[in-house]
Length: 159
Image (cartoon, rainbow, N blue to C red; front, side, top):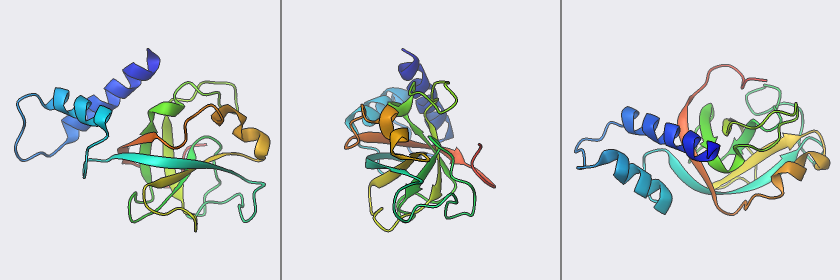
């Protein structure tokens, strides 16, 4: 239920912020239908494939491409031609996952990193300092992730 409420809140925010030139007869209903079907070109909804990465992996340091510390379960790497750096994304599939501090994930991720293998509709989710940090994410179907652009951030992602 919490996932549905969080997704509905994001959808409402997107509908309110949208600058559509010709409003359909039922914009919220059309938006919800579009998100479910995965077809929202140009509106900030991305159907992506995700992979996981951690600080112990080859070539991965403790700083992202902005020069900020990578934040477990918050930092994500993107193809900047698809998703710009400093974009805040809501990933509904991660709502409720266990965070490193024991709390539940709220679904918000911060595009502050890039990677050589991140091309097109692909994101890379930073899980923590070692391979064991990936355990909470193993239950996800990483081939069908829905990422919704909900804003931008300045500075570094929140710790």
